Image (cartoon, rainbow, N blue to C red; front, side, top):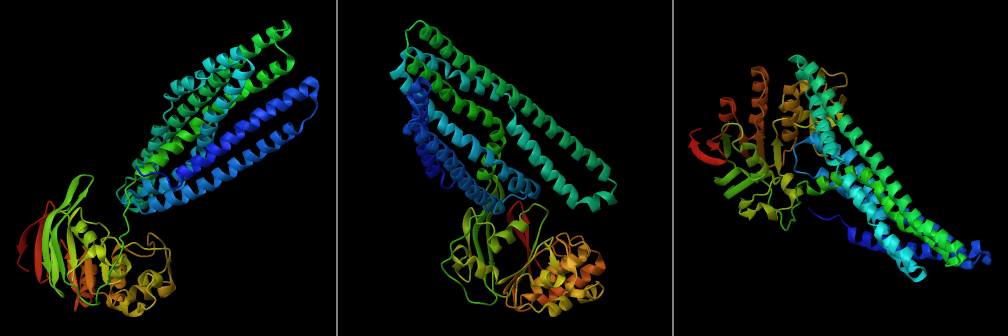
Length: 518
C-alpha cells in the first residue's frame, strides 16, 4: 500500500507543534500557579496563553491544508482506478474521501500531541513531586488500554464495507432500472436496497453505542486518575508537607497529562471509518500512465504481439498470445465470453499493460509511444459506448474540433435519428442516453469512429451485440465505410460481422486456439 504524499513532512510539523504546545502548557501552569499564590500576572503567563492559542490555530491550518491535498490526491488516484465497480468507486470518491478528514485533521494531530505533552508534563512533575509523577506514570497507560479494549468492539470496517456495498448496488439498480421494470424485478431490488440500508444503519448504531461507552469509560478513568493525585496533594498541603505554589502547579499539570489522550480517544471512533476508507483508497489498483519517448507515422499500422500475457487478480486473461497483423489487414476475433477478446483490445489501446511480452506497432514497442498520439490514431467502438452530458453533436465529436458531425452521422445512419429529435444534433443527451435507443447509442459510437478520418487503426468490440436485425444492418453498413485503408481488429459473435474480416482467429481461455478461414 503506497504512503500518503507529504505524510512525513506533516508528521514532522505536527511533532514540532506538539513540542511547542508542551512548552506552552508548562509555562502556562507555572504562570497560573504564581498568579494564584499572589505573585501577580506575569509576562510568562501572557506569552504562554497567546502561544497556546496561536499553536491551536496553527494545528488547524496545517491539518486542513494537508487534508485538502490528500483528498485531491486520493480522488485522482480513485478516478484512475482499474476497478470496474463504478458504484464502489463513486462511494469512495465522495463519502470515503471526505471521511478521511476526521482522521487526518482530528485523530492524527491529537495522537502526536498525546505522545509529546504527557511526556513533558511527567518530566516536570518529577522535578516538582516524585510521588505525584509516579501516580501519573502508573495511571496514564490505563486510558489507552481501556480505549483499545473497548475500541475492538467497534466495527468501523464492517460499517464502511456495508456502505460501499450499498452504494455500489444502488448505482447498479439505478442504471438498470429500466430493465428491472421490464422483467418485473424492480420491487425485489427495492427490497434488497432497503435491507442493505437497514444493515448499514444497524452497524452505525452499534458503532455509536461503543463510541459513547468508550467516552464514558475514558472520562471516568481520567477523572479517577486525577483524583488519585489531587486527594493526597490536599492532605499533604494541610499537613504542611507541601507549599501552596508546588501543590497548585501539580494540580494544574496533572489534568494536562490526561487531556491529549482523552481527546485522541474521543476522536478515535469518528476517525475509524475514515482510516478504513483511506486504506481502501490507497490499496486500489491504478492504471499507471506510460512515459512516452517516441511517436509513429500516421496511417494504417502493422501490429505484432509477442507472447503477451495479462492477469486480473492472479487470474490469467491472456496467456502468451502471439499474433501478427500486417498494415491494412482486417482481423476478426471470435470465442466464448470471458476468453480474453475485450482484454486483447484493451492491450492494443494501451489501457492494460501486458504482465509479460510486448506489443509492436510498426516495429516500435507500444509502451514507448506517446499515449495521446497513439489514441488519436485509433477509432474505437466499445460494446456500450459511453455518452456524456451535452448535445448529440458534442457526443459524436467527442472533443475533436475537426470532426465532420453531419458526415459521420450520415455514414452511421444516424442522420435520420437526429432529424427526428426536437433540436436535431443540438438535442441534449444525458449520461445514460435517455433520448436514444440501444441501437442508436451504438450508432453514436460508430459515428465517433467515422469522424476520426485520420485514424489508422479500427477496434470494434461486438458493435452489433444486443441489436435487432434492422439496426444491425445499419451498423454493418456504417462499419463497411469505416474499414477501407485501415488496420482493423473486430471482436465478433455474429457471422455478419465476421464476414467483414479477411482473417479470423479463435480465442479460448486467453490463448489463440485456432485460425478459421474467413
